[in-house]
Every structure is written in structure tokens, then in C-alpha cells.
Image (cartoon, rainbow, N blue to C red; front, top):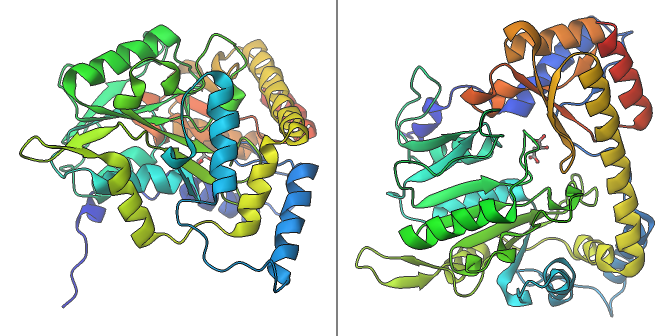
Length: 408
Ligand code: MLT
């Protein structure tokens, strides 16, 4: 008899975005003539920039010729890409990260989920609430929690509520965690952490020998120069943090797939006897065993975003999305919503009116305005009564959606 991983039975619902997709498809089927505007999942709409497309073509051409053809590449990623990332994404900002500390992958969703595998089963994990649902769901799948309690919290996870009162920045937990997921700029609230805030976490992790799993997938959307893009801008962070980065939103790679995880050489975790072990060695072992690398043309295309031309082109697309965010934030505020985020992140976090539940608002918006957003409660219990709009839409659709919401 084959047995299932019963931890999956503890999961409360299907993964958030397929559930949204299911409801939207049902609506579209029942209302074929209606134009639905999608601002739910943070999926990009603007095409790959010219430099990336050119490099992508070149990569494919190389694969078409016997002399330049490539089979398996290095599991950790090609040196040219790891070097370009180290120099442009870190060294250029005064952060000392080297190419061998960068592991290329096909997505931060996978990396944030898979990373748990190299850490012990008994680690106490702290997670913001609300936050990107992958952290909690994969913790449950890995069997590190008990059941879901009536308040929506899984037993065994340390939740850190992020509310309007604390400006959506988690406070240090009372129970000490071993692993701490932090996401800044935050998905879904759009909140950002100042240097002082991040220093507080780095000091806390240092004191407790904890590790921060820092999700910086949206760092490219930071517009305020004083906000750190990387946790490694904080002194001492290389000893206590690893960092996830993604080209999905940064450079329109949601369909192309490329991300990377930074694991500094000095980052260690301990065995039961208290001996330190290099975390990057464990990740490397996992990566080389379970992953065969991202395809060569995609890595070649990714490297193009770090060229002078590529940087300019990518920045123009980011500016386009952030102008969407500005328009949305202003319009939603004028419509009487309490609005957060949207200034250093591509997400607008909105409080529903009159205490309406998040999914209720989702249905109302879909049925009456034919606009799709993401219910805040899907990101955690503290997201109840909130709603997230993604700024990754076409401008024309943003304007139309805002008009429709005004007329609700
Ligand atoms: C989101 O909408 O939160 C993201 O698109 C999800 C993801 O990046 O996996």
C-alpha cells in the first residue's frame, strides 16, 4: 500500500493563485462577453526588453551549432551570469558578495520552498502575517507544523502579525525562532524595511544564532534611496542571512524563469552537537543532486539585463509599473479606500470598506466591476479585511479598472 504525506491534509485550501484562477475562469465561462481586468497574481504583462531578446536569440543560435552547442551546464549556474550578478547587483552597491556565493535557479518560489530541506526538522520557523503563502504552506508540507487552529495559524509556526498599527513591519517575536522568513519589499503589503529595522533583525539573529531567509524578490522596485535593497547592506548580515532574488518581476521572467539565491560562505548552521556547518555546502549538495540548472539561452538572456543597455531598458519597464502603482494608489485613495504600499513595491494594499471580508470583496469586484485582485486573507489571517492589487497590468487596463472601481 502506498501512503501519502499526511502533512498535505493539514493544508487549509488550495494554493491561493490557482483558487483565484478557478473563480475567474468560472466567471468568464458564465459571462463570455465581459472584459475581465486581471490585477490578481503579480504576473508581468510587458514583453522582455530588446537586449534580453537579442541575447536569448544568440543563446538559441549557439545551441543550434555543433561548435557552440552546450549540454548540461553547471548546476549552480554559468560563471558569466554569477559574475555579472555579483558585480552589478551587489558589488556596485558596495556589498561584498562573490560569484561562488550565488546559486542560479528557476524561481524564488521553488527556492523559498526548497530551502527548508537543508535545515533540521526541529527548527522553529517565524513567518510574517500576512506574507507570501509559500513560506507557511511549504513549512506545513515539510511536516514542521501541527494542525491549523481555528484562528488560521498552524501549530508550531511563530507568526509575526503585520498590521496597520506596526506599519506592516513585524516585531521581534517573543518566542525565539531558528529560521526567520522576512520579505522586503513586502508581498503583499508593499511595506519596506529601513536600514535600522533590518539591523535590528540582523542583531537579533546574531544573538540567537538564527538564520534570516530574506526574500528580496521585489528589491528592484524600491524608489526611496535610503531603503536597503539587500540584507547584506547591513553589517554582520553575511553571517546570519541568505537572500532570495528573482528576475521574474524585475525583468519580466515569470514565463522565462530565472532566480538566484545568495548564500554567503560564512553563513553556518549547527548540528546537534553544536558543530558549525557551511550552509552553502548543504545547498550546493542539494542543488547538484536535485537540479540540473537553468537552460543556457535563459541564462544568457538573464546576463543581458546587467549590460548598460539592458539596465536602462529594464529600468524603463520597472518605471512603467511603478507609474501604474502611483496611479492606482491615488485613484483608490480618492475612491475612499485606505491604501498602503505601492511606493517601493508593485503592490497596493487596500483596506476594504465597512469591514467587508477579503473574499467577499473579491467576489463583489469580480462580479460588479469585472476586476480581479487578491484577497488579503489568502496571505494569512492578519490579511483579512484587506485586498491586494498588482501594478503589473497594461496602463490602459489600470485606468479602466480604476474607473470601474470608482463607479462601483
Ligand atoms: C504573487 O502574486 O504574489 C506572485 O506572483 C507569486 C509568485 O511570485 O509566485
